[in-house]
Length: 378
Image (cartoon, rainbow, N blue to C red; front, side, top):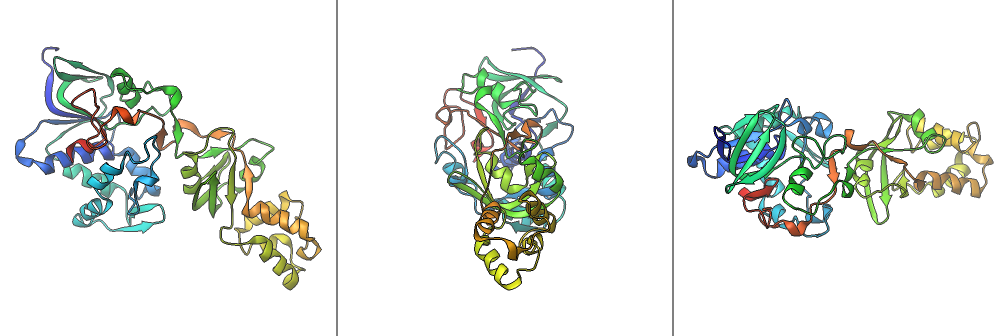
């Protein structure tokens, strides 16, 4: 053990929402113990990801959260953690702090700025030391204590909680504070090749689907996106590189390069029947004009153009053409060429083998005192 090293009872690696919440909950559970708690992060500000989530309003929880919504080799692995701290418990914290919020399809968001949630988490962890701009270079165990080597010097603790992202923003697995580095250091079955970007926009090839997407950059539409048996209905956003929006971000965690996805641009609207009905009632209308009753005008015009029906009247289209047009809307099949990658990914889809962790405590089975995320204090 190095001399003149600062010693703590608990060191939390990561000052995101998980790390700050962990520190605050330890203090709230036993405020009289006066534990020495250090929260470390290489970032310049705490809660950076929380600050941009939910479009800047912080998607702080989802009242419909259940273990079925999580990807894991053990489908019930997170059930214990979710039962130990329910979403309504955090909602009570928000209400107690006087933070107004509303429920969205994909979760709960602040009525105001996400900064309110970050401030709440910082307020709860008063008494803990927050050290920013301190990148973690290594984590080891010496003489029964954990030693954390940082760019600001080495510190030690009896207990360490890893609350960092799995890989860095470039997917290299080398960033100071990368959870995968810590996992490999202690012999977990984790590797760079088993990880990929998740909750990330998908990209398309030029001269294929990108020809549709690029002119529509900025257009959003309610859509259902499907990959195999998994489907999400939410907003889809066209970008100059492909597709984004909540529905795409969700499906990206299930998608792999080479896979096909299906997009329904008008969910709940049987377009073949609707178009045939419109043909009998208002057949002199242009195809794009009729489509604009169900889709954003720019999207309707672009689909009509793609199908060679720019100035075509609906009355002039036979059943085969109408059905192909309808399938293009209700069942658009495409193969994204890739994703925007680690630069924009919100999570890492990958593996620390769940068999290496205690599902009830999130403690490493073979490394006492080393915990993942925030479960250990519950």
